Structure formats: structure tokens, C-alpha cells
Length: 141
Length: 308
Image: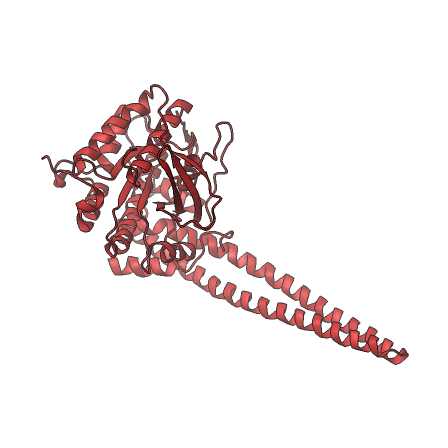
């Protein structure tokens, strides 16, 4: 069996944690953007419905044509935003999956690596606090 | 040493371990758990279940609530969050409202931190704690960590007849288990220091169906129980003794009848696969039934019913 380099696992754990932290920042940012896009979807939907309703209520051919145009524009806007959110959600979920996997490995290995490599209490506590920012699994809320 | 609080704890373990090997007849169960219908009742007993990941905390709570049936296989997966429950414990002398929470083994996680804040900090604390250990047979949910455990050289020479992968994995898990118990003790010291209520603590040595022989049970006892002389304590027993000394022995009952126990337990018979090997469960329904009943009676005895 190949003897692992003393301290190598600790360094690798540190690298995995840094990568997971980068992904956590990306996931948080993507979640915020998704919320903004969802809010815009709602705005488009409500504004389109209100304007279309008003135009229909006014009556007349010109108003009817305008109502159809507004409804189509609103629907188009909502559709484009839906596509954008779907794409963004896919990327975010992929990042979240890798993030959870890396942080779970780091969390599990931490006590053993810290003991084997005789980490200081401060280093252990700091690393533990960094790991505590991550969820247990993708199913966690 | 007549006032040694650990003597009755060791005696209880010694009395229970023969049941693992020869369960005898069925035991009388002194308490039944029922669904709670009064949603306005305040809990009489707050209980927390702690322990490292994969020791079977969730399965244990399901088992004592009667939600596991022989023949059904529980879904063995990582709990994504804390699991809280409210139920009623009924005896012939009356009933008590019980509030329980299974603390995630991953205390250093967003969900773990939230659970600790909610149940152990800001003036809140449980009345009693069941700390689940498994003598190294806890499930490693992360496959990378499992590979690292198997590849570790910590226990290069496994004892004769023991698969080296299993020996290394158990060694890896026991390091994690000790670290988790240290974290739990630090948490309990902080949480219980601020209260004056009577406390109880049960160390549940789970999955004994995976090491169901006299010598292994003796070794497990030596590891988890404080010895006659503190200098002979294992690292785990040292932490346990330090916790009780820190909070004060008198808070855990009298020297003759302490509310501290180390008990063997099987929640569900389950094999333990490691790499290409499998440790077979020897768990038989009568053993599981007797150990669970004894465990439930112990819980009830500690949580306030002196007639139990």
C-alpha cells in the first residue's frame, strides 16, 4: 500500500473546501438572480393582464388590437423569462450538487485528518465553522 | 468505593449484555407511546437524540415509536435535517407529553447549527439526551470518505479473522465518533450549565447485532464506560466522566441510582457493507425486542417516573 504524504490530505481537504466555497457563492448569487427573474415574471404577468383587461373593457376595434398586442408581448416576456430561469436553475442545481458533494467529503474527513495531522484547535475550529455554512444534502432546506 | 456514581452504570451494562447473547423471555414494557391529539399541551419531557452520522438515530426513534416492522426494510439514507416529534408516553400511572428531536450527526452544517440554536441555546435545553454510538459501525454516506477510510493506513494490521477494510473503516469511524462526542459534551456543558433541572443521559451502544459476542461486548463496555480508576478510562469514557464532573454528579441522581446509563441496543437488523466485504447482522427478533423494551423502560425510569 502506498503511504500517503503526511499532511497531503489536509491540503487536499483545504482545496476541496475552497472550491466548495466558490460554488456556494455562485449558488447564492444564482438563487438571488432566480428570485429577481421570478419577480419580473410576475410583474409582466400582472401588468399584461391589467392592461389587457382595461383595453378589453374600453371596447372598440383599436382597443381590441391593442389588447391582443399587449397580451402577446406580456406572454412573450413571461416565456423568455421562464426559459432564462429554467436554464439558470439547471446551472445552479449542477453547482449545488458538486458543492454538497465536496463539503460532505470535507466534513466527514475533517475530524480524522485533524487528528492524524495534529491540527491546532484554532485551525480545526476555523475549518469547522467554514464547513458549517454548507447544507447536509441537496434535500436539505 | 461506595459513592462511585459509575459503579451502578457498569453494573447495568453487565446486567444487560447477557441479554444480547441470550435474550430469555419477553420483557414487560412499562410505557407505550401514542400519537398526540392535544396540540395545546406543553411538553413534560424534552429529549434530544445525538450521535455522529450513520449511527441510526432516526431509525432508533422510529423503532421506539413502533414505526418499524420486521420484514419491512427502513430506507437507509442520510437525514437531510433535524427530525422533531411530539408524542404521549402512557403508563399505568398516567401519561406525559414528550418532545423529541434527532440532532443531525452533521452538527457542522447549516441545518445542524440551526438545530443547536433552536434546542440547545438561548436558554433552551433538553431534560435528557440519548447519545447513540455504534463502536465504529456507523454508515459513511459519502463514498469518497469511505474510500479514504478504506485506504487509510491507521490500522495497517487488522486482527486475525477481521477484514482489513472493515477494521480500517471502524477505526476511521471511531475517530469521528469521539470527535462528535467531544462536540456533544461541549454543547451539553454550555446548554445544561445555565439550568438547575434534573438531568439524564443514556449512551445507546447501537448495532450490537454486528458484534454479538461476549469478548466484543466486553471491549465495547471497557471503551464506553468509565473505569474504576480514572487513569484507566478510554478517551470516550474520559469525556463522559468529565461531562458529569463538570455539571455535578448530583444533577444526575444519587450514587446508588444515577440517571446515567450505557445500554446495548439494536433498532433494526441490518448488515454492514464495506468495500467488497459485508459484516452480517446476527440480529434476531427476540434480541431486538428485549433490548428495545429495556431501553424504553430505562428512558421512562430516567425521565421522571420513579415508580417505573
